Image (cartoon, rainbow, N blue to C red; front, side, top):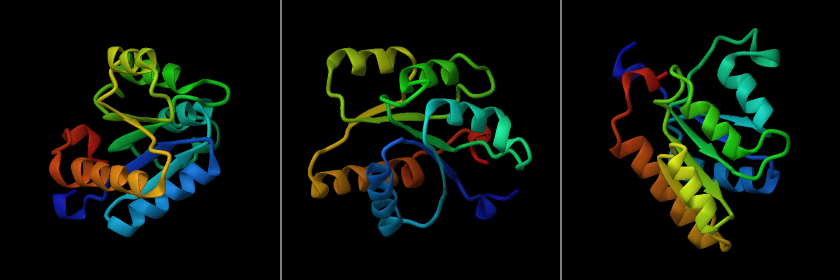
Length: 151
């Protein structure tokens, strides 16, 4: 596949419908140059990443970047991050934590487990919009991803 034909996949692991819809709406305003897959909880995300359960019959698609909420039902984001970064076939996928938590322990733990970035979700829409525009610009226009993470 040539670079021209490559369409990155953003995996958003987010249980809150409103947060997910707001994130997608903002990202779609600034770019349509990537696909989006949503997983609503940690177990769903692991099934997607490993091609299990409902994802078994789909052609496997490796995410280019993962946007991860920490506070998820079932397997939480902290455990998902550890799983991704401890797996030889997944660990090169960039993981950006997007959380309402500004707790220094959550931030340090995320980085110590391999998070590539940590964004505290701004509470007001203009600030959140700015953060997502910066996320888009950095991860989909500035960064050169590993060829393993390019679909």
